[in-house]
Length: 614
Image 1 (cartoon, helix red, strand yellow):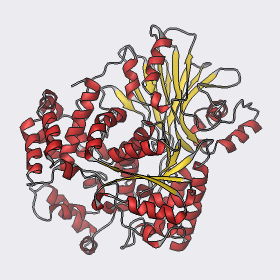
Image 2 (cartoon, rainbow, N blue to C red; image 1 turned 90 degrees about the vertical axis):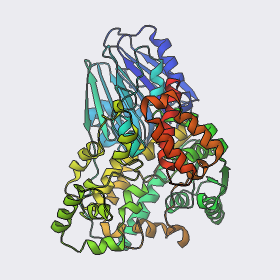
Image 3 (cartoon, helix red, strand yellow; image 1 turned 135 degrees about the horizontal axis):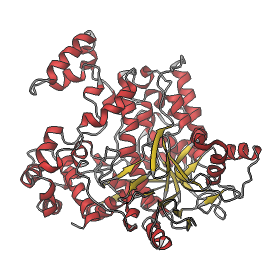
Image 4 (cartoon, one colour; image 1 turned 90 degrees about the horizontal axis):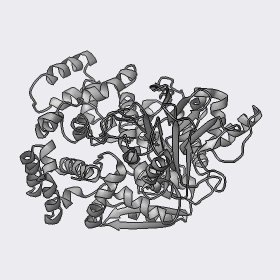
């Protein structure tokens, strides 16, 4: 919906500074701007800036938003989907509303519930509320991390916060510096996996967390978590019926808007199901001129069946490479998932026709759709061996040099905390350390990143441990980051109906055997979608958002572009340039498939050039 920025403490020319900061994120809100500058100077002063993309209550939904006497002021990015029910509840408790927009429920909700406000919210959100009476800042990020929230504590002790890091650059006390610890885990995960970002001393507020800031002290707490422990005793068909009702209810809640709403549509079940439930006037698809890397035919065919206008584009390597620096600028941190590239163009295409789109992100994490969640027939047979013996074998294998079957035995332990790091694994840790210069090898290990998450789900099944890790790491760090940044780059609001607290609450109670049945992943979701979708869409194998980077990097033109980056002084600062150039040359010669590794290195160097000029 919007973007916000703010800071505490003294700063000369606060009004001028906050305007410059807000201008950095004008793409998030081109329709309107708003500011709050507290009268109090000194350490207790607060300054807010806001850029609005008008979605609901177009005339009166300006921010910052105030309560009746002006003692509570807030800035907010996102949508509260239960705001009408919450509004009526608050009116019944004596609160007076001036608008019919969802953002006003936050200020009155804070007045009524205090920091327990988050317990009443259903939606995607990041917000900050300033309570003038107590001199307290209170803020929160939504349950799944759909909307971003960054903060930085300056050398002077003031707090800078906002929707995008790039706006911090306009604050005189922000000191941009590469975080040397971020690079090691990035090479393995392909995204920024730590709370501290690639900018030293700048942090992400984790999903499902709120914070309190007063007298220069910031405290955080988790206000919500996924609960997989209470399983339903429904039959498979009853679960499918339950999912169908809930998905349709969530889509109905997510379609509320005073502007045009469309849908992203690939050929897969997730977006197809959302589209069929929404029945928008328009759908949007992109692909490449290669049958292996294109699902636009299926998307067009389904749109025709449903009687919906489909807009589609085929992308070229040249336009993707040309746009890549801009993509990394909007991303704020390096993120090398290749699907960010077509998503950028998909959002651009949709923004030419609508202001809001619904999309299918989250279904794989909630209903277990990834292939990595499934087991091969051989693994199923191996797991008939008693668990203590398998775990003992895995423990011994982990200490031995690599041999054929090494990874199979470790995975056969049934302990994903020993082998599963999420849906992406680019550089194995040893290879990551090998290409990094010594100064950048000291970041956290993969185990350092994943262990605190696994520690919170010790009693879950093997499948649910994997889901829990992805919901807390991969989903906010990769999937939702690119969804937000690529859509907002084009002033487009992207909504994700699967990632809803009510959808999650029901999905968490579904038995694992209904999610993966030996034939399909997310089997029960497919059965639910089959009530609306033709069978070939409901049961089509997952294809993802494939991008032909492997082929591009073997073409002379793009090989030369990447090689120039690999031979730069910046590359020499961070990497062993002989080793990374060898990865590129071997790939070009067809000796190895190093496409993802090369792209991950190139992504970092492209990001670095955008923010540090070299």
